[in-house]
Length: 328
Image 1 (cartoon, helix red, strand yellow):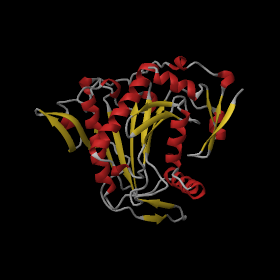
Image 2 (cartoon, one colour):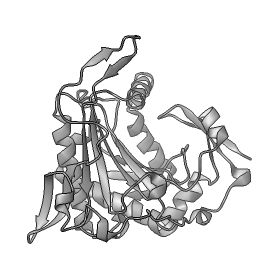
Image 3 (tube, one colour):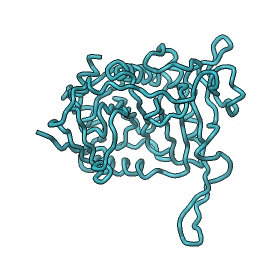
Image 4 (cartoon, helix red, strand yellow):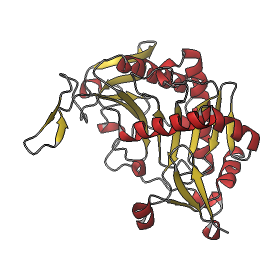
């Protein structure tokens, strides 16, 4: 029997389509290469440093870089000036496009992937995330910082070389504000942070758990927007990603590598996105919000029903997906 499930974090419904359900192993992907992208013409490879904007941050060992951060050569926003909100002659609201758009080049190896990197390299990537997130969150011009990774053509990447991006924006996106409002409503009604409550429930249920460390937990969502969608949460309450310590960051790197490694083995290195969901920069120590990371494997397509209704149809039972990942 198909089942409708409710996501308390978004207030969306999803359909778990058991009548058309596939086995988790049926989702093994065949990643499509990014065309025309080789190490020979890649601006992120060692020796091509002059092909990128100036370096902002780097980790070096024995004179060679392990991680580099630069401004994006083709930024969505520009860093100069102040964000000023105005109206055009017709009354439509606009702002000048002020923001900071950076690229975190994750490895000198053109073919590297987080799933198979050594743990020290993944640690350095996440420590770079922390450093740049803290720096951008301090800039008084910006209200939100968005940290994300696109892996594979189906996830929107245009360069094969492993990299992530971080963008500081002078507004609070509607999706961020919506999550804050839902979280506050849950706290007012239940007296507990929505995500602290969720961690407790998932630990009790156990059937959707993928991986756990002392201070972090990963599980397939009860009501996912796409198959194998996985959330990583700190078990300790924290509303802002920039509050993470260096040691916590290394532990986060460990669980992220573990989960991505399981996806890599279980469904053949799928295209995926991940993103950090944090409270806005000027809203600190919120007792009702809890930062988190979601990993979105891009292994199904959005069709007309999803577009028209906003309801996702999930053709693999989340509990089966979680077991398949645990066993990978």
